[in-house]
Image 1 (tube, helix red, strand yellow):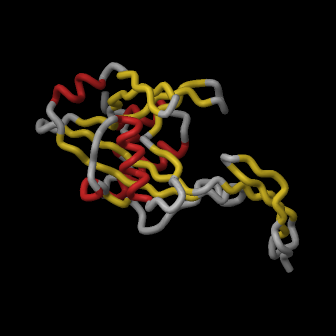
Image 2 (cartoon, rainbow, N blue to C red):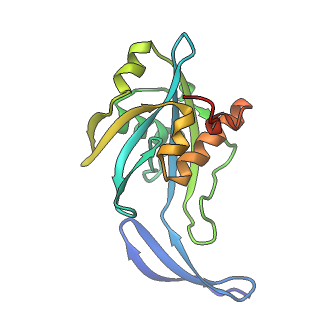
Length: 191
């Protein structure tokens, strides 16, 4: 039998509770809210393509990570609204809900054994002129909400080589699974 969860620590960014599972095990659960993330796949008329990723420093590993645009939902904000807001804040690109593809019919829990955080995963496949990919081949610096970000176009087969963020890799694979080609990112015979 489980008892009522007890809040043991609270911070503006997260809350931690202690509870007993139905098996009687004591657990800590971290509540952080929900997030929305968008995989921006840029494709030229000739078929050249890349993902527009955010390169930024993360304190957990004191290194830079390549990530899809993402962020936490604001109170009473719908996931698709959060996705569009995050794209605008982090990239400066203004998209509409019609531009987004929901990659999964319900939210996913990145680490349900510990985090109560859940994520909504979207993608946008956008036709762009070749000059756009050329412009983003070298990182473009952007300041968003006190964060220094770099936007960079990364070819699909390089995403998993450059990032150490499992969520970015999983999100990209969800996108390819949606398209029916889940292993393109892992191809080693591409440049």
